[in-house]
Length: 173
Image 1 (cartoon, one colour):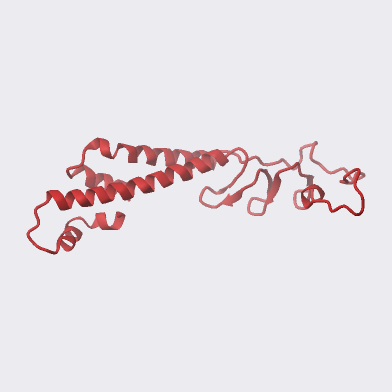
Image 2 (cartoon, one colour):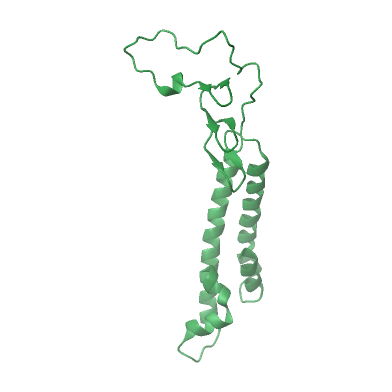
């Protein structure tokens, strides 16, 4: 859909520099998509010696009374699936079957978890994608208005003529 808008722009009254930001947003969106896909999200390895549960040790919290309510973030430090002691801010992803640092969610679009190491690329991808969508809407409206102003229409059904001549404008707008 982005390419078809650029083809329309090349054949109309619109200057080349008006659609350069759209190309830039498209390249940045795809680049951040690739970076968030290939970057490891911060998976805790299962066989690392610092995280392996020793059989004779228990995970306890010192200096607590029986009457105090202990938040679950401190008591649930063992991942039953990975069988490791989880550091703070680590959650288990059921789709990847791994514990991930600063786990946000598992994104099926990038086929990866969004975590500590790739969250900046994911949010930049979302930001540039929203910028690209806004740009395409504004550019489509601008092109629609320029077609109405610069083409001579003798009939009163301007929208029908424009729809027949430039159907992509209505699809993108």
